[in-house]
Image (cartoon, rainbow, N blue to C red; front, top):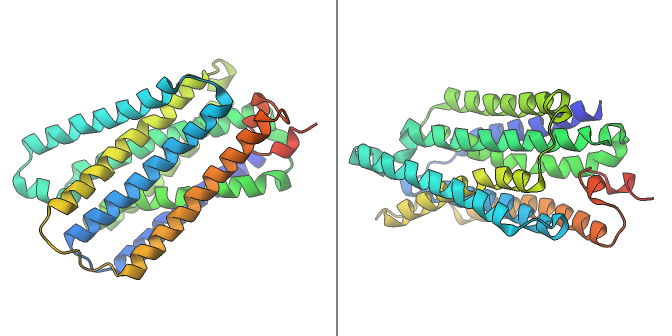
Length: 285
């Protein structure tokens, strides 16, 4: 039962993030440079969040940094090649206004789809390895923190669709993305993990692969924004400060939880297998 509740909570956070993005963005009238800056900023923050969480876990898992670096680099280089090809074959007008081109939206959708599969894998593995019977009261707080990071993911997924005024497509992408997460988690939980246990390095590579791609897209957006001679119009200082503070709180919460778990394990209070559970209390003897 706890497994299904957690799936529901994470899905709810992601969908709420998408709906917040819709109502939030629909109220702002900004020029193209402002949107490029905001989109790039958000993507870089999310990519660094994904990367830093894995770097913190290195202290515990004792796997080679090459797994994280290779996953991030693979995602980065893959998107670099794809975007280079896009610039070569596209017209100048499409390059200058990439948010209005479906290729950009598809890349974002595929990247976060890969991320949702890896996230579904991690969650199903946690519960498959013995935490299916953890009392709900011990899991609500950490699961809530886990769900919080779905806010920027939901916003990021719908952002390119909403910027190009394709609202229905954006909501379709948001719902499909969560469908990918739920189905991957259920299939892995009930079938795949009975026959295969991934190595720590494989998990690290898969988890950081989308981070590299998202980081490149964010960097691409920021570079495009700074190349554009337009002034940034439509975003007030209060909007940028509020967005920055909200993202900072979400990222900090996830990193603090991850680091606290690692420190407890380093002190010998629990072991690695228990570290894959969301509730440290359940592992302490």
